[in-house]
Every structure is written in C-alpha cells, then in structure tokens.
Image (cartoon, rainbow, N blue to C red; front, side, top):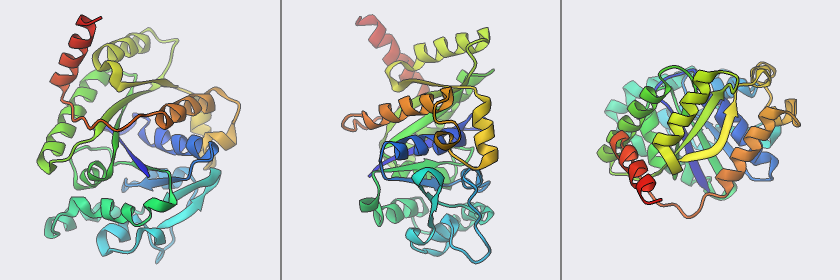
Length: 274
C-alpha cells in the first residue's frame, strides 16, 4: 500500500478537494483506495455524504481509544473506502500529551489493513505542525504539499515546507516530497505568474498536472459525490485523472525531506546543469 499525505499550513487551498477526487480517480482506475479523514472538521467525510452517528466508530476512536481502523472504515461513493472523522478527533491533540509515541498510532493502524488497499490518501488538518499531521508524516511514503494559485501562495508554501522539515527531523523520518498546484484560473494573470514562479522554485518536485478552479468541484462537494460520478467527462475529472496517473507512475521511493532553502538550491543546481 502506497500512502500519500496531503498537507498545507492553512485552509482554503483545495487540500480536501484534492484528497477526495484523487481518491475517486484512483478508484476509477480500479485501484483499491482508502481515504483517511484526519481533519477534525471532517470535511472529506462530509464531501462524500458519510454520516457518522453517535456511537459509531470513527478514526477518532482509532487514535483515542485504539479501536481497530477497520471498524472506522465504511464504503463511500465512487468505490472509495473512507476512514471517517468526527469532531472528537480534535481532542487527540490534547490527549496525545499523555501518550507514549502518539505520532506512531496511525502508522500502526494502517499496517493492519495494508493488504486490503493499493493506496491510502490522508487528508491532513490545516496545520503542518500538530500531532495529527505528525501521524500522517510518520505513516506516509509521499507527502504532497497542496499550493493554491492565489496571493501569498509561495510564501505559505515555503513556510509549510520548512515546518515539514522540522517535524520530520524531530521524528527522524524521511519521505518523498511532492507539490501540486490547485485552484488555478488561467484567465488571471496573477495565477499564471504564480504558477510559473512555483514551477521555477520547486522544479521536479511538482506534479505536471495542475488542478484548475472549477465550479463543478463545488457542486461535487454539495452533492456528496466525487467528480468522477458527478461530471465524468468534464475538465475537473480529467485533471484528477491525469494527477492519478502521475501518482501511479511514481517510481521507487527516494526519501527526501526538503527545506525551503534546499528547494531553491536544488533548482539552481538543476538549471545550472542544463
């Protein structure tokens, strides 16, 4: 099972949207996909119209009370298996202070179902330095930084990369870093300039696929369906189909923990060698 954690340091960047529809695109390609909602706001769970009733097991119970993760997994639209979240997940940040090695709990839980899935996609909370995100980093093969093509996007991206490196160093873990651009509006000059600047700074760490701003994605969230079911022939579905293919084509993992400074050095080195 390959595990991807989708992260950023703030909300509104398209992270949950990317997690849900990337999972849907992989499932459409006949991959067995587990989507893990690790955000206390439970946006991925709501985006797939999954209701976790009182007394039902969620990913919060897995981390807080050591319930098997398989009890938190339920089928969702588009062939996605969802480890659903509830607001109680937010309590884990406080409770974890009294737990030995709390950042290893998700990794251990996922190991018990690794033979059932080809991919696990983790939708992280909108902060990169909490214990929930630390669980995702510990469990992930690939950490995907989601960068929206809006004002201050690059500054936020470099801050997030710096935090990721600090967390990875503290935990002594390594992962492959990738970057995906989202909410891109090609009609806006600022968005085009930001995309060029982001590609220049991150270079080969970026996926070639760019996720365009699309009203169909908002409609998908409102309908509780992955875009592959709501508008399978539309532009948004094609974006995620291309991204899923890139994810499937990722080669042998070459662990990499990258700081903002090192990203810039790597790019300068690659440009100088051309």
